[in-house]
Image 1 (cartoon, rainbow, N blue to C red):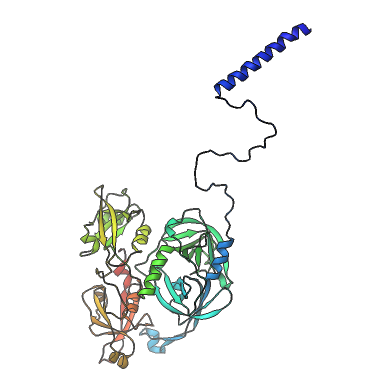
Image 2 (image 1 turned 60 degrees about the vertical axis):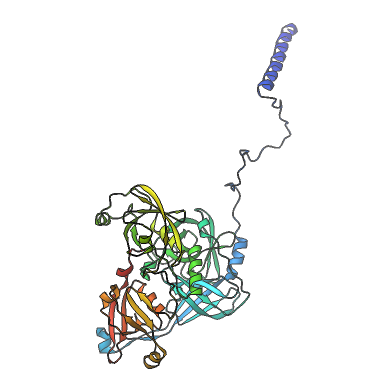
Amino acid sequence: MKSKLIPVILTAAVTSVMTIFAVSHFQHNAPYFTAVNESPVTQVKYAGFDNTPTINSGPANFEAAAASSVKAVVHVKTMINAHIVQSNDFFSQFYGPRQTPAQEGSGSGVVISPDGYIVTNNHVVAGANEVTVTFNEGRTMQAKVVGTDASTDIAVLKVDQTNLPFMNFGNSDDVKLGQWVLAVGYPLTLDATVTAGIISAKSRSLGINQQNSATAIESFLQTDAAVNPGNSGGALVNTSGLLIGINSAIASPTGSYAGYSYAIPSNIVRKAVNDLIKYGALQRGYLGIRYFDSKTATPEQLAADGITDTKSPGMYVADVAPNSGAAKAGLRKGDFITAVNGTTINTQPELQEQIARFKPGDNVSINFLRNGKPGSTNVQLSDLSATSDIVKEGNSSVILGTTFRPMTPKEQDTYGPGVVIADPGKGIFERQTNIGKGFIIKGINDQTVSSVDEVQSALTAGKHLEIAGFYPGRQSMYYYGFNGQDAYRGNQ
């Protein structure tokens, strides 16, 4: 029996040696054995270098961002005094002037400088006679409204304090889909509240700012961070604690949070804030075109403009205003704008957001397609009156073809606050109202006006307006209706 086993054992031994030799030869000196006491590998990945964070990098930590943010976010409270409403409607003729009751409002704001500048929403402070802010530690103080802009829904407040905790601006262009964010504010009259979510979408247009401005700028960041009434004007921050947006709106069938909230990108906010602090009004540049997205246009729009190309990328140029920056730069009807300063343009909000960063007189680079062929040009932006002048408080201005001027000190002593029509002109304002030279505007939609800027803000709000005033030497008050929406719709 042993004599039979010996050849088998020898054969097995020779085979094993030959196998080991072959493996070592063909595997280029790979180790023969693996030590049995080596710890098992817990994570396997390719050895190529990649500095992109791995998906399994662990949960984001919000503690530092939340702790710093709540110190710089304030509770904004407003008061609108009771006031008499003058009108010439049927009921006022029989029952006399109406009195509206006092109204209280609430929102949030973000301290953006140690010397007391605060950014919030225009709709939070619109029409307020008194504004107060309460800091996280409990201090409450009066705030002055530095400036407001309905087109961006941004307002700037100021408190007389120094060494305040404040928030630095981040770059909203760097925001990515799926990125973690925090919403910080004072919802539902609660104390400072922090909620978390992700960026769900960018460059959203809701049409909500168009309720107050026909020249609305909308390119919202969409998140699923919980935002409720009272969060308006609060901060949207990244995990580094940088301000990347101002919370402004929610999409909800009930009026409370239902899954989606919207913030104004920080790059739009920063431009609006700088203008309001420096000039008291938004200095907005215009290309001088009428445009829309041919890919989403209605058949009626396409037919009206004779458009057959619905596949080209970018925004279709439907018209170019004479003497505008676009006209001087050679843009034509039928062009498709594909990029602004190197940033690709696919949607209307993207075009609005890029142009909204510049003021009249600035130059922007425009890439376009013409008959399928690429081209580029530089456009000097203008204001709505096709000039590159800065609108400054106290100066006469041409708005919609009509020249407005502030009242002289003597006129103010005689008639009180108001704005004078220096020249009705031949624009849409004069055509709609048939208003005459020398007319003194006292109020618009029951709100007293005392500066050209206030008239401009009202006229560019895009609402159906009632303009009240009088002609010197006449006893009666006159009322004119004006539809600003028709004057500004569809322009950039």
